[in-house]
Length: 163
Image 1 (cartoon, rainbow, N blue to C red):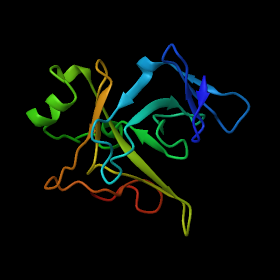
Image 2 (image 1 turned 180 degrees about the vertical axis):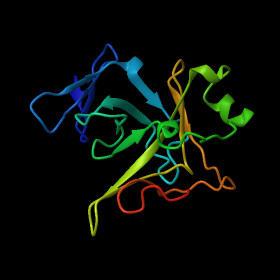
Image 3 (image 1 turned 60 degrees about the vertical axis):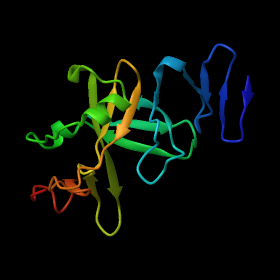
Image 4 (image 1 turned 45 degrees about the vertical axis):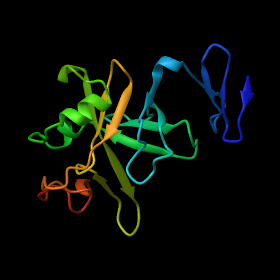
């Protein structure tokens, strides 16, 4: 197994090992990797991720980059944050992730945690991540004319305001 300069190794069997900053490394089987063929918006080189459980209870997960171990995002199901959240996935976007059955789609939004000057959490409902759980392919949409915000208040002083 050869470790690259970013702290990620892949053995001959296709298993990834992520050098965690705590006591134990995280073993990531190849079938757990989610690939965003076009990367994320503004970060085309970030293509391979893994979805990890967090130590925080609740609907939060960690989307950890395998391209850069210093990059991770707290993500959540946007439908838990806004009950009437909806959008249409174009045929082109569905084709890019080989999605032929909407039941195989996992939709996540990236959360932003701010601590200064006041603690708050916002969700990017404008740029949801859509992942085909069968093919492990994903894409980030930009819902330009949706009226959704990239900073929808989840927790903090503005929680409860409109989108």
